[in-house]
Structures are given as structure tokens and as C-alpha cells.
Image 1 (cartoon, rainbow, N blue to C red):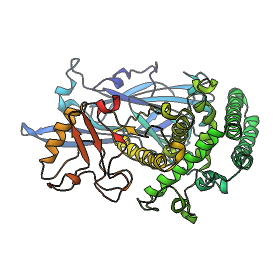
Image 2: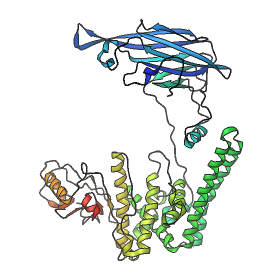
Image 3: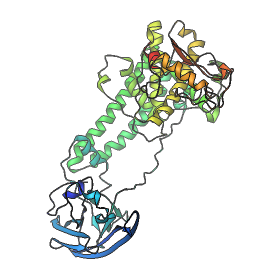
Image 4: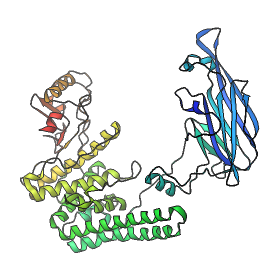
Length: 514
């Protein structure tokens, strides 16, 4: 939407109870058709609870060679227009306003004077032209977005309302809408091929470091092949976006160099290489568990290492590229790229979670291998902005932590290192702040005929068994929560689960701070 001096008054389009709405578009004809619709409501026999709707609709033919206005919709509305020349065509603004006036702040008290579901369509059979965007952008990001979507022009803008145009190709009609719709095409991440993307191969500690680095180099080779195509496209770009196109390619080159730096680090630093391999073992393990492709009692070793053929977990190219590009700055506290924020931009379900969990696993493992007992503590801080997303992502991250904790128990390289654990901090309206509060809430749950879980973790992240029973029972072991005035812990009620004794999950604030 845009607010500008149009020569017609649409200032009323932007209030809490808008008086008007408008559209602006570029076309070639001197006459346009304007279809108008609105509804009126009147009380039935003076009854405050019963109203009768009356539909208003009409078509106006408007000569836009000069500005003008006229009463429409039985005199209940005013149609105004103004047109000016633009690049050999006409840039026209049309507005629809309520013709009735009341004192400021009184509009909603006069329901009978309001126009409901008002809409307007402007038609030029000669077709619409892309709406001018101009070369001045509010920010560098706006400028880049204008470049990226340069082949997806807008054909109109709305004033106090959204707009749509039809047909999609060569539109002739612009229509107001209060709830615009757009179909977003599905995006699928490119799949990788070969051992380098298979977590089982990446976890194999028998592969020499040189062969390992040579295999990972293929990720960069494939990425550079795409950069070559992008550079050719940038060189074909002319006008104001030429330098911007070149800058985008430069950033792609920087990403490729960061990947190469990550690969070199794996070749030169044994501790980083070991952490990378072990992280792939953990990621593979948790993905096999989430897919129920291994039993919950399978442990670190031969049964886990067995090849699962087509069911073998593997990285998508963008995931592995992200991990490699961020690896050096993750393990080196003084790295220049510590000032850089890496953004994984991909739709839901595309694999963002696995990408950052893989990187997190590498660093959590590396700290323990290098620092031993002092390698514990807070390593990763994750913030979610949506409550439903928080629960889902927390469950998936907890599954990885469970895999890491089983690895710590079975791999002697983790001897005398601190536990892997995960915590959830949501505020005390959602999770308990103190052990005593948690103990009190558990007491309430134990008295419920159908226990309701107030502790966020609904199922064991490793085997999927419910933390609480579906109905009240006197069996303490059916409730996977232990709480006292000085402690709080989860455990899996399933006695076959390796986390039957305790889960490495904490949701009480006091427990997070300990």
C-alpha cells in the first residue's frame, strides 16, 4: 500500500473505521469500467437484534482524461478518479468513499450508515502495465528484493486496501481485496548423490582424513558449478541492478571459500574431524529412531552401524554446505565470521532443523573431547517465536540429546565428561519456575482422573512412550516425572527404554540455573 498526494482525498482509508479505499494502476485506455459492490444493513422493525442486508451493485464507465467524481450506489458512496500521463500511458487512481459523514469517533455507532464488504474492480480491456517501482529503495534489502523479483511485477497498488489483478498473465482487471491470496509453489531441496551425503559414510572413522576431505570437496565443486551459472546471469544484467547482481555472486564466492575452510579444518584438526564424525553418528542415530528404523534398545556399535540401504539418512546439499561453511567460526572463538549471522532460508519441512542440530552436535562433542570435564555448560541457545513450533522442535532436539547421551555412555572417549542435556525455558505461565512449584503441580496431576501434562514434554523423545498415563493409577512408575522440593527430573515409564532411569531433559527454571 502507498500513501501519497493523489489529488483526490483518500486520507480516510487509513483509519480504524476507514471512510474510503483506492487503487492506482497503469493502463493505456481513456475509458475504464468500474464495478462497485457494497452491502447496507438496516434494523428490522426497530429490533436491535435483527438486521436486514441490502446489496448494492453497479457498473460505471469512467472517462479518465480528466479528474472527476460522482455519486454511486444509490447516493451512499462517492466515486473519485484522477489520471496523469506516465511513460506514454496513464497512471490512474480511483477511490470509493462513503458519502455519509458523522462526527469524529462516531462512525461505529452508526451501523446503518456504514458500507459493508465494499469492493471495486477497474477494467481496461487494453491491458494493464507493470506499476512503476522507481529506483529509490528504503534499504539495501528492499533494493535486493526488487532485483530478485524483477520478473514478477506488480500491476497495481492499494490505498487502505490490498489489490489483486487478473488474469495472471496480461492482466486487464484490478480488484480490491481485504484478504489477498497467493499460491506459493512447492520448493524441494536438491538431493545429493554419492557417499559424501550419507551420514553413515561421514561417520565412518576408518576413512582417511585425506579421502574424507576429498569427498567433501565435491560439495564445493557442485556449489561452484552453480555459482558459474549465476555469474553468467549477473554479467547479462544491465542497468541499476548490475552492481547488485555482481555483489550477490561475490557473497556466493565467500560462502564457497568458507566451505573450503571448513573442509581444510577437518583435514588439519583431528579433534574437529572426530567431533564431525561422531556428530554424524548421533544425527544418523536420532533420525533412524524418529523413523522407527532401529529399536529403542539398540546401542552404539555393530547393530547401529548396519547399512539400512534406501532408508539410510543422508544430508541434503544445502544442509552439509551450511555445516561446512559455519564450522570454522563455530569452533574458533576468535574467528572473524563470529560477527556474521548465517540464515537458513527454507520453507517448513525443508530440513533447517537437521542442519543446525548437526552443527550443534559437532560443537557439543568437540568441547567434551578437547576440554574434558570442563567441556560442559551452555553450548547452544535456541529461540523460537511460535509456541507450536517450540514444542515440535524441542522434541526433535531432545531426541538428538538422547543419542548423544547414549554415545557418551558407550564411548570411552567421553569418560569423565559431563552429561549432554537440554532445557526448555518458556516463562512461569507455561513451565514451573521452582522445584516446589513443580512438586505442587505434580501433586495436582497425580489426583486427576485423566492426567493433563503441564510440563511440556508429552512423550519420551527416544521411544515415544507417553510421559503420563491416560488415566489415574496408583503406580508411581506410570508417571514419568519425579519432583521434590529440591529436584525435578523426567524418566521414561517404558522399562525397556534406555532412559527409564532418567531423561536428559529439564523444564524447571531452577533446574536450568543449577
